[in-house]
Image (cartoon, rainbow, N blue to C red; front, side, top):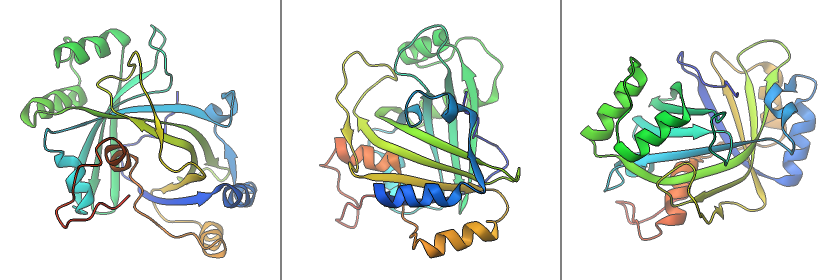
Length: 247
């Protein structure tokens, strides 16, 4: 089960690159990074990541992101398969951003807990603070499932055992859905010929990685899969300043 989540906080740098550029960057990191165990076990280029994001009726989380609010929180359910069974790995997650620092709080839930929550909008009896906060905010803000995002993730970890993690997300796509495992769903790919590169770290970037970013001309972009997914499914949404920007 992928375990790139943490509570201590980290910085995330995001880039969108074409496939040829992806090949060059992937080769350049090889002396310093190695594929994580989940990527090695994956049948294809990477392992599947599927997330169901929640928002209010008025898309408050979406507009907070588009407005660049420094303090915000996302609620999502995440899994690593497109099939639900007793072995399914499912997590309830709160992704909190405070200025440039991102914290992810997550906890494992069972298939039965997931089904109960989707149907009843509450968790079966438990003693978990993350589930408590998820349920509290669900009712306080009247959150509902809005968009389903999935992609194949190719993950790398540092050979030096530091906090640096690099991921390449392939074929990022989204669909409007009210569940993690909808019966019939049509996904739309966000950027067909591009790969999303993310660099994640807790302390500071190593010198070799700073040089790599500079030498390859990587430019940081706002690249929220959540906002892109909302825009793909709801192109009628208009940002307060009159412009919708893909972030």
